Image 1 (cartoon, rainbow, N blue to C red):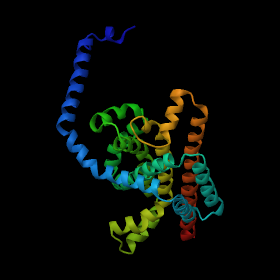
Image 2: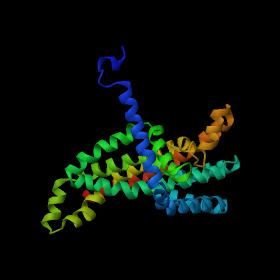
Image 3: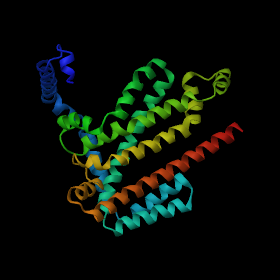
Image 4: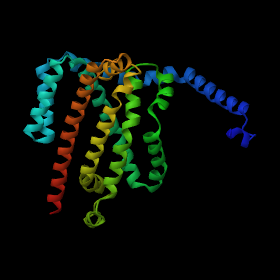
Length: 295
């Protein structure tokens, strides 16, 4: 049975007129403010292009040494560091170096943006219940709405390219860092906060000196999830002009190139495992420091 036959007031003409009105309003908004929005994101685009070129054109031994150093600083594990070096050597040997560096560039920028935006929002939600009530439904929508749906207005506003892809990745990857920052701060023991108050700590001192340090394991769990979700968007972002490992995967799907798809897919998996192991190990170290501090 047709839904519209049950509710005649919601006629097809009314619905069609509503859709046309929404489409027309968005087109007018795009014409009026599209150039201004592009100009606003232009510094970000320039930085992304510079960072991607830096990774691609830097000597590969230097890049691998830096990545190995970061893996060691995060994990303090020789196994994870050696695995990182082996993975990137294999990626280079299989001819996927440039695509991997492009993917690494956008994932790095997206993660830093999500951290810079998400942690303050999470702090705001933890401090004000009204903010949590207002922001939580927005996060629910960001996590549940299909990525192809919000790609439409992003592409209409900014066209095809790196910035629309970055925005799509950030929309998808932002909620975990916000939620876990909020959760981590709210889980701080009230007795600890009361002790800080007794010593005369201000609200800002309690936040930066007590709550955020104790919430760091949860915050880094959010960073871990944000990185994983950003990597999962690599293939979809390639559909709107983002260079990287997603492009050959998309080409392999279109042309049924099994080997090409498998190799580039495994490169994405290797990046995910490296990021996951390093960030998880760092989070566990923070948790152990936290426990020792309480002990």
